[in-house]
Amino acid sequence: MKKAILDVDTGIDDALGIMLAMRSGELDVLGITTVNGNVSLETATNNTCKILDLISAEPSISVYPGASRPLMRDRLFEHRVHGQDGLGGALADMLPTDRVNRDMFGPDFIIEQAKRFPGEVTLIATGPLTNVALALAKHPSLIHELKEVILMGGAVQTYGNITPVAEYNMHVDPEAAQLVLRAGFPRLVMVGLDVTRKALLTNKHIDALGSSEIADYVRKSTADYMQRYFERNGVAACAMHDPLAVGAAIWPELVETTRYSVDVETRSELCDGQTVCDFQNRLQREPNADVCLKVDSDEFINRFIAVLHG
Picture 1 (cartoon, rainbow, N blue to C red):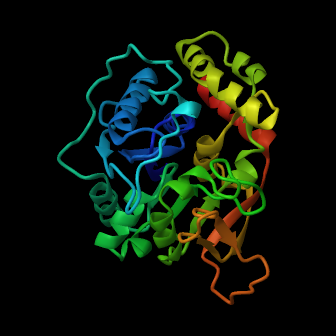
Picture 2: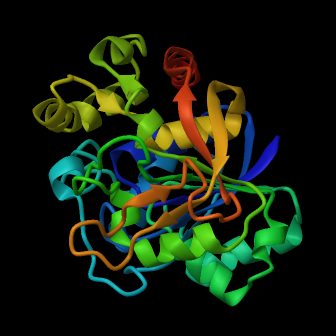
């Protein structure tokens, strides 16, 4: 199995990504690091523990809290989309098992595991890239020790989902995103809105999960999320942003990537967090990202449902 670390800001779609990663049987998840983003660091950490309990994950899976705020900016939560608790109220009464390792900072865990398994670890980052940037700042050779970084973030041929041009994760901490993109990772896969908006989970798909605790959770947690997506996009569905990043790690054949030079805007009143992809090589920079532009969305959704159905 592919060794992996999940770096999450656990809201609704991160939770679905964690469930896919843990239940697929394809990933050896070494641990989960949490970061401020959709919700506070504390809430993201608690939500991660809840999801691990929901799917009866092995007790050996620990959660490592990381950055509690962006590198240079104020926090920007997405409570309107994910609810005050980050999970659409689905597990509001759950008191999860305490899996939190408070003796190790999230970025330090990433560094430790990359050193322990050089060239073997896939880092799947589905929140703002603050933890990854902090790990790089402390240990620059991380770029050579990780096997690959797969991140959910950005939008290069479509509009944003937090500003007209910026995707949420990039907008929340653009300085961190810029550091990560410029670091020189040999393989950095960007799973952005260009493909995640094509991977849509509908009520029909959820019905296919049957009757189970997991199915009930998915149905309840995504209800308001779907309503918000319908209000903005006119489609009654849940965009599978974070699960698709996990899917790209498990089933890379489901996405088609092209290498481009990509950077992030950090000094614009209108465009902070915009991912700028140099399609025509006008800046004459070395390509630094494998950008996902096509996805077999039907096959991905089918596999996602099969994994959660068990």
